[in-house]
Length: 217
Image (tube, rainbow, N blue to C red; front, side, top):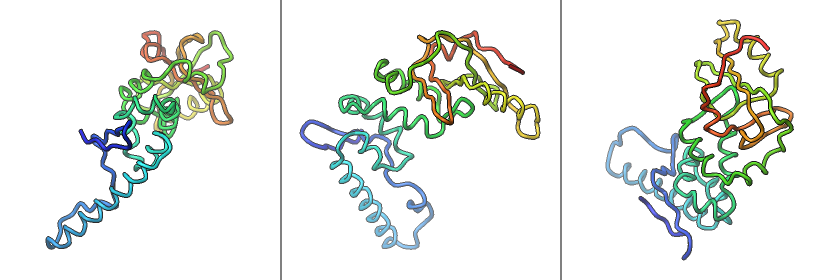
């Protein structure tokens, strides 16, 4: 475990943080020891600059953003308590999750997102979204691989119909649409904007045996 002290009260855990990623990392062989030493010195300089920016960040969320994007999730996992103490944890989880995850795309390991969301303060997380306008409703998610497991589900039937129509053509890849009836208390977060009407379900609901496939609405 690599610990870097920010100040007398806070220590960052940099376990498994790489700091510098391709294409800045040279993965080939060096012609001589001088070139190798110069490359090593360059990497250490970059790492030192990143650590300096982290040291002078106002909070854990800003500290995370100084790192390479490939290190963000690991940094958050390493420093959950610090993010919580800063009041930045739920904001960081949602930002990272919504970079690529939707009701029709899952990015990263389900087990990792499950862990991160289970660490959220339920009320704080819910309040960061829109109030859910339904007592009960049918939600949907799609999968190109036929796997229903995922936290994001949509209530936007127009979006669902678009995927149902598209996936009928196997030349376009195909996929499966799943449906699940839920109640307001089953959700952790609701997002509604011009692009989405999407909920994040409690993991125990997302893993329900009541999920069914649908071919039409």
